[in-house]
Image (cartoon, rainbow, N blue to C red; front, side, top):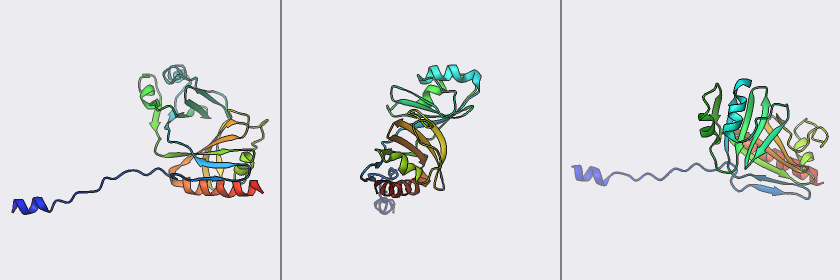
Length: 192
């Protein structure tokens, strides 16, 4: 009987998380919309008294001015509020582990699998995003390095300007198809 039971044991297929929007990209006349490579991300909250120690542990100064960001060695920190930052590490390091070394009051939550990043690059990038985002994206109002939490259509996004015609759109994985499709339509309109 034991022999019969052993022969009926099924081999389960391995389960692997598929990247959201894997391989999707669109190029129009003046803009390219593409999914960016995975990155490590944390949502960081901390009082002013902890900022210096966290900045040292992360290797980049936490910005303290609205709509700003700071970057160093593949790690970018975006100011989202008076005590809130989004930390993005594209170099393969673990910002959550770095924050765990700090004994001062703070909250660091890993959100790497929650977010998806979409790049919008080219002369029509600002027009593409402005198809659904009310933020003034002129270089005077939103210069290189500017970052903010805003909306695109009906989805909340975090927007970072990496260059004059280079934006990073961070959104929740569950809204990524909507955001990508919205940006794709905006890119087609910007190309006209």
